Length: 295
Image 1 (tube, rainbow, N blue to C red):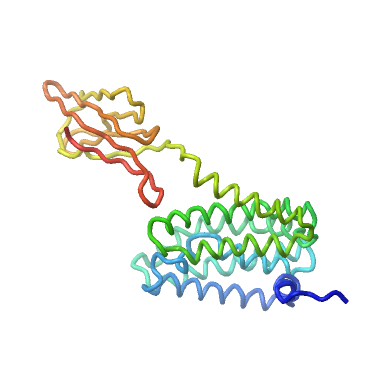
Image 2 (cartoon, rainbow, N blue to C red; image 1 turned 30 degrees about the vertical axis):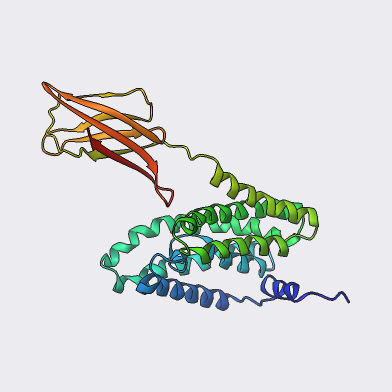
C-alpha cells in the first residue's frame, strides 16, 4: 500500500473523508453563522481579517468546498451547499439585529447574499467535478482560484500600506489556492498551471495601472453660490469633465474622472470667475479620490 504523507492524509480526510449528513449541514451553517456574527459585533475584531468573514467571500469559499468535496453526487453537492447558505447568511443578519443601530434595517444588505445563495446551486453542482482531479477539474477550479487571487490582491494593498492589517486574510487566501491545487490535481503540470494562473492575476492587478472612470458630485471649497447660468471651462489635461450640477446655496459640480493626475477648471457665472485646481489620485488603500482647491 502506498504510504501517504501527513498532508495528504489531512486533505483526504477534510476533502472526502467526512460523513456530512443533512443534520451536519444544518449545524455547520448555524455554527459558521454564530462565529461570523461574533467577529462582526465584537469591537476588537473591527477592520480585521476576521471581520472580513462577514463581508467578503474567502471564508465562505472554504466552507463551501468542504461540503462539495464531501458530497457523493453532484445533486447532493448542489442541494447541501444551497441549504448551507440559505440558513447561514440570513441567520448572520438576524443575530446582529440586537447589536446594531440599524436593527431590522440590516436585512437590506442581505439582498446581495440572497442572489449569491441562488448561484451556489449550479456552482456547487458543477464544482463537484473537481473531485475527478483531471484537467476539467482544474478548469472548473480556476475561477475559484482567480476569485481568491482578486481578494488577495485587495488585501495585499492593505498589508503594504498598513502592516499587518489584513495579513491573516492574505495568508488565508494564498493557503487556499495552494491547498486546492494540491488536493484536486494529481499531475505536476496541472499544479504548475493551477498556481501560475492566480499568481499572474495578482501580479497583473498590482502592476497594471487601474482604469479610471467614475463620477461624483462635490461642493467647491470656497462655497460659491452659483446661478443656473454658470459655465465651466476645463483645461486640456483630459483627466476629468466638470459641469455645474446644482445652484444656489447648495452649489455643486459633477466630476467625471478619466485619469489620475492634476488639472484645473474655471467656473464663470456672469461677472464672477472662480478658478480651481483638481487632483485625482489613488490613496494608500487603492481607492480613487478627488481633491479640489481654490486658486
